[in-house]
Every structure is written in structure tokens, then in C-alpha cells.
Length: 234
Image: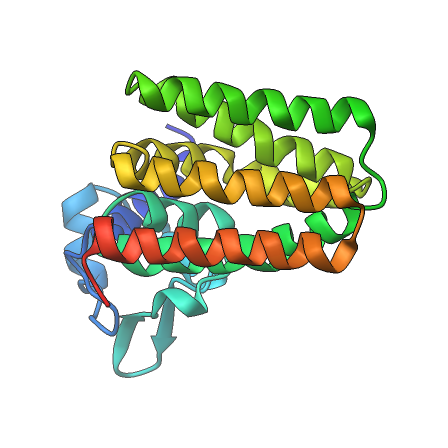
């Protein structure tokens, strides 16, 4: 196996242990010799794997003391953070922070879209809300999630800012997984439909401030629902 492949394999294995909570934040990585024996690779390969994680902000090397796992907020790798958001002990914190990111980006996108959205795009939003309502009535979670995601995707498109959609693209898989989880709860679906109707009305008004506030309200409801029905925290 090529050297770089081995380095990636070892780094990925260590990251798995961190994401799963086997090595918690501020916990120390096993020593170099232990990792070498565990993965049956050279010490140089282990060092490079650890340096890879250090470059991603996942761990920090303290000379003479050891290698420590950083808190999630210090990670700088999108891939690593998304894995933490999808599985393991960091899931709750990452889920909350994902909604915080959505609030920052989507309120701005709605503000822009209010003065740029076309009549055809507004019709598209109405269609997606109708699809969400129909799916909710028959408890079709997959169909509900697809319409929900399409609604938000259309607003990003209507903002007219290509960078907004590009920022969201890496998040698509984890957003789909999150929506599939939360949308199993009937009350969350009902709340989402209500908030989408408010956002749609604000966009139709052409008022940027009203659109920003409506999307902010939607994100607040999303956060409250996540904490109440999924994470069970106040």
C-alpha cells in the first residue's frame, strides 16, 4: 500500500476513535509505539498521521507531554467536523452549531432573496410547502425532507449569491441526515410547515428585513425543536 494511503488510513482510524468518544476532548492519544503496533505501520507513518490531525486542529502536540484531543470548536477540517456532526459523542454540540451556522447564512440569504426572488421561484416555494403538507398528512418523512430541503435550496438560489450555495454544498449530506431524524417527530413537522409559510409570505412581501426576521424565527424554532424533542435539553 502506498505510504500516503497508510498515513490516511491511520489518521482516519484515530479520528474514528475521537469521534466515537473513545478518546474524549482533552484526552491523550496512545503513544507512538502503541499506535505503530496497533496499525502495523512504521513510526514515521504514525507521526505523519498525527501531524495530519494536528493540521486539521483535531489534536495538539505538547512536546514532552503527549498529544491531546482538542475541543470540537477548535477543529478546522470541514470533513472532520461533519463526521462529528453525524456520529459519536460530539453529535449534540455539532447539531446545535450547525443550526447556528444556518441562522447566520440563511437569514442573510432570505434578506437578499426578498428583493431578487422571481414570481416563478415564489410559485416554487408554494409548491414545496404544499408538498410538505401533503407528506406530513400521510407521515411520509422522506418526501417531507426532500420538499423541505428543496424549499431552502430555492431560497439560496434566489439570493443571487453563488457563494452562499457553494458554502452549503458540503453540508448537504449531514443536513439530509439531520432532517430525516428530526422530521420523524410529528410536532416538528407541523412547526416547520408553519415557519415555512411565514418565510414564504415575508419573501412575497419583498421586504428584506421582514424576510430576515422570518427566517430567524424559523431557525429559532428549529433550534428549540432539536433541543426539546431530539437532544432533550433545555
